[in-house]
Image (cartoon, rainbow, N blue to C red; front, side):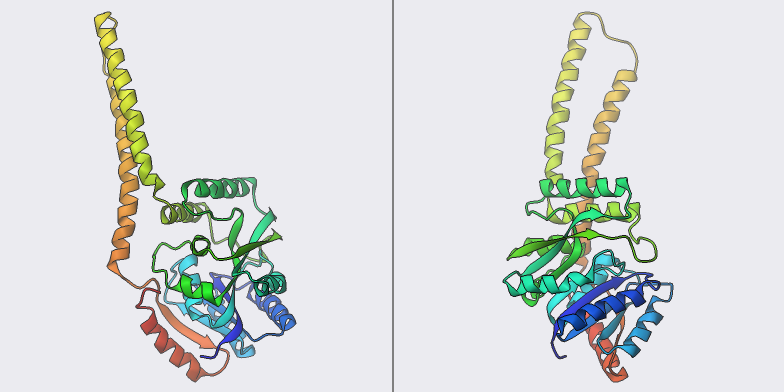
Length: 330
């Protein structure tokens, strides 16, 4: 298919309330830029009429392409699907909640034109978020950079503009547990920040409750660091030292006839060492499980349908091609 200058990739999950405003703001900023563009809306298994609204937008705007996943695969895989379909020389990644302002696109394009390969949004403030959410996010990025061999900018999300060069490299990465912002940081090249204040959601509720955020954080850490595996060595050394000290205390107590009769101390020691062993086994199991999933070689996602804002024939041919594509690593 023909190339365009700008592709905008938007993963969506139950975002029917905000799609109209999202399309309006994206279309306005693209009109101001005066470059050829496409808006890729990825429906990640929505159940609230999001897909039907996407079809209406396709009918009204030939720049819109609606992509329907066969089920809910998760934000990062839905985003990956959209990135494999993007035709643009520049690709903007943005969420559907409008917390990240699409109006920054002209400034981001100017930085790309000046030589940057990636322009990533860096938050200076988070409106409408609880103290707990802000605190955990801040400490997560600090912890991730301590554990990771590659620095990932703090206080950033997936909101960023990348060149075609970066996109092609990203689409060649086959890992299943994907952390897109970290994968882009790993690529290197020239990456520059653009600061902004993150707004509240325009409509709807967050699609990242605490449980999903915890899993996402663990995916990020295990995808970019093997230091948790090395932790077992240090824990083993520490517990060995404690065990030797406890043995020494037991021998001294026996010689001084101060040994306490009972099972409480023995039970505490066994519980302590067993918990350490189970913790280490859990870390090993997590990494081994990811290796097993990767070796199965299943497609990362399945695309059910692609509808373009042009003709039904184009949509059908795209759908058939993507069924074949979804069987590969990308």
